[in-house]
Amino acid sequence: MLAWLEQFLVRYPELALFLVIAGGYWIGSFKVGMFSLGPVTGALFAGLFVGQFAHVPVSGMTKSFLFLLFLFGIGYSVGPQFMQALKRDGLGPILLAVVVAITGLTASILVAKVLQLDPGFAAGLMSGAMTQSAAMGTATDAINALPLPEADRALFVAHIAVADAVCYIFGYAGVILFCTVIAPALLKVDLRTEALELEQALGMKRATPGLASAWRKFELRAYRLAENSPLAGLAVPAAEARVPEHRLFIQRLRQGERIFEAASDTTLRAGDVIAISGPREAMVELVGPRADEIEDRELLDLPVLAADVLVMSPKVGDRTLADLSAEEWTRGLYLRAVNRGGQELPIAGNLALQRGDQLRLVGPEPVVQKAAATIGAIIAPNPTIDFIVLGLAIFLGGVVGVLLTFSVGGIKISLSTSVGTLLAGLLVGHLRTRYPLFGRIPDGAIALMTSLGLAAFVGLTGIHAGPIFLSALKEAGFGLLLGGIVVTLAPQIVGLAFGHFALRMNPILMLGALTGAQTVTAAMAAIQERSGSPVAVLGYTPAYPIANILLTTWGTIMVAVIAS
Image 1 (cartoon, helix red, strand yellow):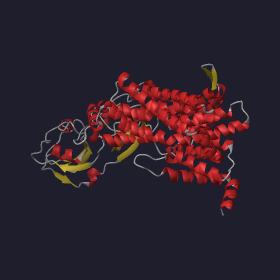
Image 2: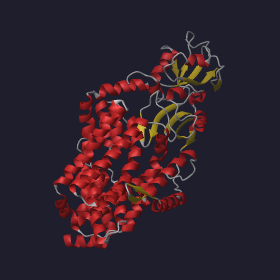
Image 3: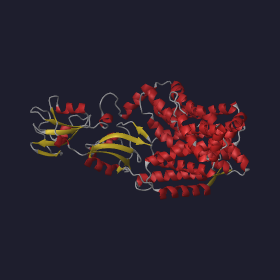
Image 4: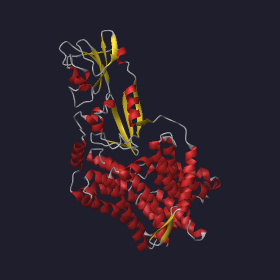
């Protein structure tokens, strides 16, 4: 039976790949606390296992195709945040990400030199210890471009997977441990206290209603104004201003048999039935405890729209929510979520929006439509993919990557098709914030390109390395694991010192940036759990796209330096 299965996998390598993908996602689904291998590293281990069991042939073109799709997808998704981060936002987290990335590269080179690792082991050491699986792809491209016999190049490529598998586990768990336990102890701070103080500085309120909570809630109810109502005789703006700490709006009212929209010159009278939007507990405070709630279907038949809006206008970018909430066009508008770079941000008065942010808006349809036109554009579901832009961008990015070379310390380095494709994705992703109809690719398609593309590529790398995994592991020895620990912790220690003494960053934002600088999202989630607050994501989001680009590029540089 086993012999038949081995022959079957060798004969049908495409089916072996799907088996590895399924096994990788299964392995990656197991969690111990905040730690899990994830589907990509799971696919690596599944590929190593299948590769040891059967010598499955691996197509180099298939690997390149999958990896280029992944790189374009990741560039496309982080493009808006990457460009905005370079312009102004999150300067501290960006500088921290650069320092951490450069420290990680330097430590990787030094450890590889001390251990006398070949280019494959050296690149895998860096990609695993820095938890950047995408660097395996750029390192593979760089190795395949070396003027060496094909057998040596194939061996070095296999060594990448071996070293990555050895170093990844501590690379992932080490960042979680450092940022949640070691760093707070070194800083002598309490995460919950620091998070609470940062929330207050941002204008967030936990238990009491305020701007952050009022923008998130939306209810529409009808009340009849009694003879002694405090609202009787007031104009609509004056009535709404009676509860300034809440976003309460009188949308419509009924006077006798007539229903009409509330305007600034409308005066409320006893006996009127008013339709109010906002938090229910604040409505009672506005109309009085003795007001009668009315079930008036005709009055409450107000078209309400919930829409995702892309921030494009420079008049909105860089402005805080508190500032924008005072604009006339936000009257009757409610904000339910702010998404930046795939992460939901905490809604707070001092949170500044950026071009490329996605807002979830709710309110009367005309209000939402007007606000969307002011902010940018509604992101309408579109199942079609602009394959013309997709194909040309990858092709042209690859051409630029091949033609563009530069020297580092006397070493001539080509940008490579991988980095060129990544930069093409960044450019297209940035352009869609200015021209939303250009290069449209649905989020689901991008998710498939980034998740399946990388998992399949890494799985194929594991299959290729499987036959020599045990012998290569013996060759690398225990020193590879210790070297990986050094490469993981050195950037965190240097980054912590730089952020605390040079940048004087807030501890919560600094720890969030450290997790983004080594692209360990689970570590950011662990900080949120220990601090009891989501605010660490504000440090994570500017650092993550910068680190993604730099650490991916380091695969090329590692090979060039070690092979020289």
